[in-house]
Image 1 (cartoon, each protein chain N blue to C red):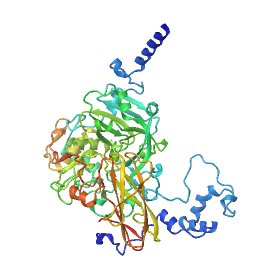
Image 2: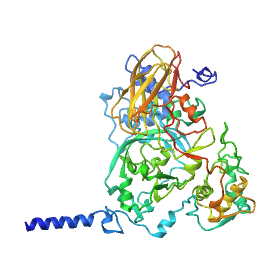
Image 3: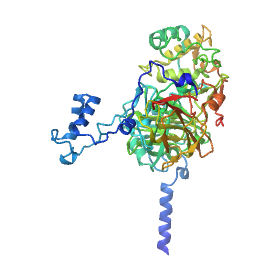
Image 4: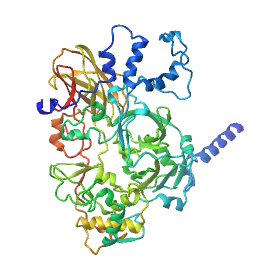
Length: 431
Length: 183
């Protein structure tokens, strides 16, 4: 245990209380009255905000008894919104936002909470004007409208997308506080579209076409070169996410999705596929998404996102208020296939128990795991490790750093440790 | 019997007519007859990528002196007066730091190809006005950055012939992915 980094400094602010924790740990003995409910909500949002937020739900019954069975509810709406009592949100910086993993259930990330990463903003694209150009080493260079792409045989898959920089600051120590802050650059959606291979067959590959340059129509004109032999089987050209057209920050109206590959290869706002015979060596695959080793060499085209897991409840910034039953919950995934097994330790890695995996357990997709636990009020260090179908086991931090040093920034997939102190506070530590 | 044969021939005709493109050579459409053939002008308008061998480099040229002017006007506000101050990413320096505890990855110390510098500036810089510089301006500012890193001399003139020949320090510093490498 690293006592230096594990202990809070006196200046450290109180840990944030999660929705889960506030609902579970502070549950009142009696059902709340309407007055108590509104008072509580008022203290959270401010009176004016509550009025605005609750108005559609109160209808003409604002002065009614508070029993929702005695007043007509709100009317139907064209495009739904979540309850005004729900507050889970992305953690934003100008060019990225992180998914609140600790607030989610199951495996699907709501589209509005899917992490974002862009290299010069989210473009506003009229789908009627958008075109996909397929050219280079093809029999016929073709231009497609979105409507035409939607006419091809369609397919869909539940898949995770993870930024290769996810958890990257942890190479240098336990920098982040919450699961969201540290690991929030991963999300899962149902992605629908047409197979890349179908569209490329329409243009007809010519001999010598071994790589493909994919380019976005954002202000970075983001580009990556991809080896055809690794992407042809599975890659999708997606126009939909979780049943509706892509969100703008996810590439509307068209994105590439390469299952299990680092997120930046899944070019958003896709406008061009150029078939070539060798990689173009763009900025993103030379100066940026390459992994610097201690000897000064850098690994290039490190596409696969290796097996990883994180306990989301309890996790950093949360607080256990009562001893007793806690369901440890988390997410596990692997860019190389299915999650075979997740093991959980509550004593910093000395002993391991096998967690329950919730169905569905899909390849290259977040998988939910759970484990029953009884917190006795003492100090504990929670860890999880993912073993995927290839037999690969998520490494400890020590094992990872021994091989790669601490300069590579990308592809940090070491076991996460959450320390719980005697007051129930949960903190990020590295053991 | 006759009717069955007719139906078979009819089916065969339909299969050939909608079958894979290969069955009638250099067709203008693929198996689904979707999309339309792009014109050379349409392709040229978007085909801006530049490969390490120089393929894709446009006409034009630039010098260190011209590049210093372009840099001061369009780049220095983000990357600093001499390319090291920021607040944007450092463009100059860092040579000899890659194997240290604090590596500084710049065009001079880390980028393996000079063509990538041209490609990236041409497609994505300046950050607030991407694709606003002319080919000459991009050649010039690329030349200036390479000069500041000691990779070309003061009198260098870079164009589609000379740029791909610039030798970058970290050219042989990249290795293929050896993973899984742990466990």
